[in-house]
Length: 336
Image (cartoon, rainbow, N blue to C red):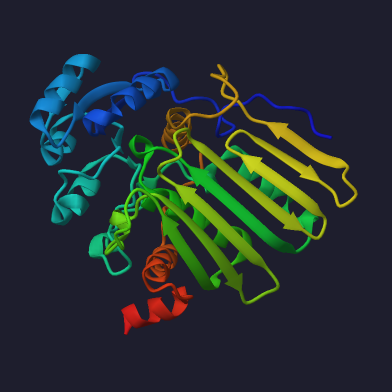
């Protein structure tokens, strides 16, 4: 059994001090920014919001430069990373201009409104959706162990939060990306949604409440997804059942148990100054910023890819129709 490890969230030293961030947010994100400032070594260069009054209040609270014009901010305010906690107030046609001007961008929300959104086209490879399970320390360890596990037969992914920690669309995107990394392309899915309203979502950004998804694949594998933006506390969990045992992962640990019940691997990942048993989204954002600003790191692949969005759109359609949907067929129709 492996030793319990205490490393930072990305396995490397934290980013040096003196680096600066611009944050674009809503008033409801104030406590998340408080948590983020405790978890990161970056200075807050500027804070902005779609509402000028909220921008002024946040600027005073965090003693940072105020902005209610993000396009001007990324052009004139020196910074190392732009952190988008909301896309509110950002005109769709201006997104690419903002991303091109920003040094690097981490966004809590997917930048594309849907599978056919031109926002995906021509966006430079310094825009990342975060926090991403694929970039977590437990998932990287899983990738190292994967060849010892044999064929993956079943996967369950659970992700939940409250609205100020990300939308249901964001949680679904992360969950879908996780499932397809583990199992391959989803061939057919069936989805259901419940929640505060009975309205049928016309767009991915209108998703709200709780979603379950059952997925089928071309190979001998099945998967289920359970996501929510009404979950109160932040939590992510992945269970993988393979030929050579069961692997369970959260944001901060991994355990592999063989078919006979013996523990083959057990690791816990904590920041140098752990803040409790469960990783908060602020800690995860800080880890991702450290990683993308570390010059020693190999450039990481941005996501979501169009294939991920196709699955999300198929989920939305399945919720509306009550029928199974094929993401690949949907993608082909969009391209036609």
